[in-house]
Length: 431
Image 1: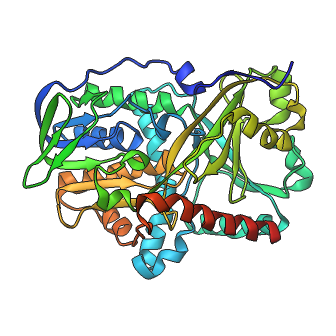
Image 2: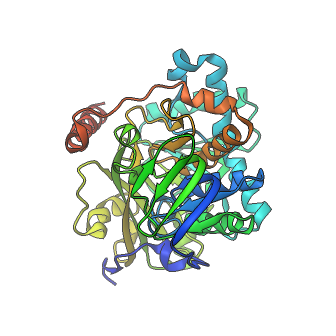
Image 3: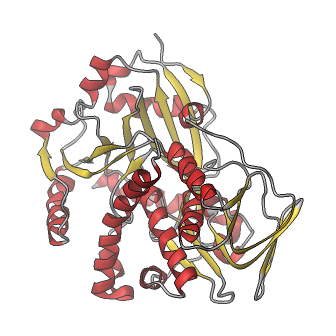
């Protein structure tokens, strides 16, 4: 067999259990809340609001889970996605502890949602952080100490390089940190299952209904091509696909391309040899690699974040050297799927969750910087708390972290960040 590609499409789209369509908006709707964006942020905000008894309309420009929510690596990993200690000057030590705990509780929230609504999404527990250098491996001890201080209950342990083949059949790493409280799943099945749950609670979902214009005021009015929605509150959950719908937010997030491939189904003996305990894995590089086995024993391998705005012409060819560097054993294995998608990157790699100061009935969550599977759920809960109850301590903590607007306008955002990332990669190579 040769290392060729069969499908330039998402493995998730090809294997989703139920992608039943929702209608497009035609006519006028009224609701307590209008949510824009049918990804994990929007769907879970709508679900949280419906659970609290509010009426909700959700507008999605394409299909539920079409963006990064249904295309990501499927790694359900604790944490907010950044070393939050650096934000102590903005949120205080109590706020830092809250953010660390939120990074843990958000994973539990996803698990409880899956259990409550019986969502079949191939959830599997087990994750290992992989150190590329001895210094990174040594730093894992601080992470373990931090988890112990927080009272983290799932099993965690360090695995040295001499024992790492019990976790992954690769010679690329200096060690690992196993966390049995994190894991992996089929993200498109997750978000579509959550959408079904929200719809069952009365959320009116409209696909293929991009918002063209927003009228702000005491009541928000959203216009689509064939209809409009009037609502007391608005939630923007568009992330990398916000474009210029709300310029005050779009300038704070840079859409960046990320790419994934999936092999043909592997023989059981080979799959077990590559990842003996079927964990999700992720290394520590600036341009990190992340990978896992799917339920049908394919190796799903992702990474290679691009800030140029231009996708590789052949994703599989671009990703092949990365796969083979980790697993040279796969030189003759076929790649069946290749795909990419846009994730929202913030300047400080911290998610943006809050409401617009000029329009207090407009809420938003975006910029998960590649760590959105769990944090979207937590953000959704905070937004729903604030709308339904009038306040949310968690929303106040997240909102206290300031966020830079990328300089130079839309045309210069990508080149400037690409230069910045090149510096980090050079520093990593020299270090």
